[in-house]
Length: 440
Ligand SMILES: Cc1ncc(COP(=O)(O)O)c(C=O)c1O
Image (tube, rainbow, N blue to C red; front, top):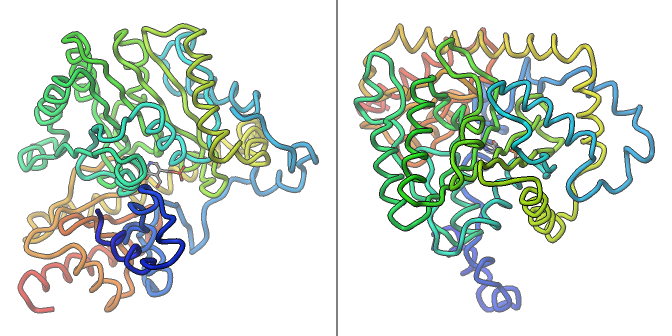
């Protein structure tokens, strides 16, 4: 059991709450991960706050005009009525059209209608409820988003097995990228049990990496081979940061496109939404879409009803006004140009980070993981504890970053204005080097 859970259980020991606690209740805790570190940074990161997965400009979250101006225009029905359990029909249909537009090689006839869930976290958790047995294994990238541990291990009582997505060689290669060999090995090993369950997240949190076309094909081949060898394969595509691509060699479709029609034994699930793509983090609206060569409309109806059961028995339904605001944002003529402007802002921040990193190679303690997309980039730390470095940056320099374990430091450049990126990274590099030499 996690030490933080043990601490909470000890506190409740001898009380009615402690005695009544379920096994799942006993396993749960609030991690000292991204959310806790971000709350700390909110108080002390006076110079730069690069902790949270949100995009800021001059201290305020980015927001589309359609969202700002549509709020007061909602009808009573749109503002306060219950939404259907699977979501408002129009937003589901519109989102499906958008998925097809953004993923031209996907055949929309062969996928389910997206189901509305209250944010991507809920969608991932529901997929664990439906497809992951207690004691089962979910494969994920190592490093991965820290909440996967809470969802798959503590809540579902299954095991999260990390695959090192970036080896030393794949980081140092002339074109840094995924270690497909390691991924292949882990998938084949798991396939021996008769089933593979994996969650893929591109653009990846925390590395900020998205695959090239060759890597995308390589990943698809790995799953096809596992299916051909007889295993059932579940691939959860966590597309939280979809669309925020900054390099031309990235394949700009979700891997869901290829997996949805790949093989009867492969079930792909796309978990996405406007949360990060459309800068509406707090609207808590995500979508879950199923795709498999082996499924037809009656199967999809049955799967959607299963998911509706998970929704009904947890939050009952998602937020109604948010769904109507998203419909308005999709229809608003300003949205495309505003999103292009925000994307350009993110691109410039990415380029500033890239320029700094490339012009300061061979840092003795910080090695950047490959990054080309999304909100973040991360360093592998050597000779310096990522957590101690985080604390030092916050306490001495007012810079908030996130440590994930002892050797991964994540910097959310989406939260940093372009003009402070160089100075912020200089402090990070100098502080890490000073700590590495024992001078701090
Ligand atoms: C990789 C990844 N997946 C899913 C989510 C969940 O997003 P939501 O806010 O929609 O629950 C996040 C949020 O930070 C994330 O980083």
